[in-house]
Image (cartoon, rainbow, N blue to C red; front, side, top):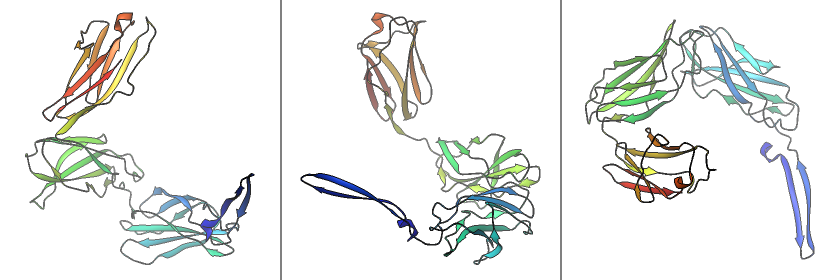
Length: 313
């Protein structure tokens, strides 16, 4: 088939040596699917799409493209244009508020190839598309931190805000819990042990998008993760007099306590030597290094789950 097209190597080998030859195989077939099919604009009655030529033309020049549409509630596609000679098309006369799938196929002298399809239904409206994938960044006994990506299309006007809604496990009612302009939110005042569903809506001047729901429910409880510390290197070198900065990733829930030692003794911090910690990093900074700054350094991270130690020099 078309995917057998390519450059093949034939190698012969015996006790005297090896010899290779190259063979180019060109399979004559219909084209592979167009690539990078994208929706570039949505209005209340139209959708504009673009694509790139197929990776495999089937051994024959692409003659034209066929663009088709399908209402999300139906199973069959209807042709929009059958002789498109460019890599874009505006599909007009769509029903406002309806959702559609679109597909594009390439045609050569051997026939019509495989289609490229839009993965999700596209709602024809001037309100935004739903926000992108929602990620759970953190969970505690009474809060959850969520983030998400922008909608693929804003409906033609700027996103004003995002609305986060939640639903308790034994309720059929969604309630608003946050309004934010950024792509993240922290939801507080949750009940420990309760199970919640979350969804996010994008809002522009024309109205609200359909919601994007979190795939699984979240239980409000403190995460407990064993601490870990992973220096990128086991040894560091610097010329005397130069500054040194060592960043070491850490992890663990609750946030671990971090202790630095030098040659087995607690590290003494000064205006020249100091340690700063963040949620996922511990950083050793030494200004204008001296000879006696050399030695064996240890990092210990500990929480209620356990303890981990790493060393570097």
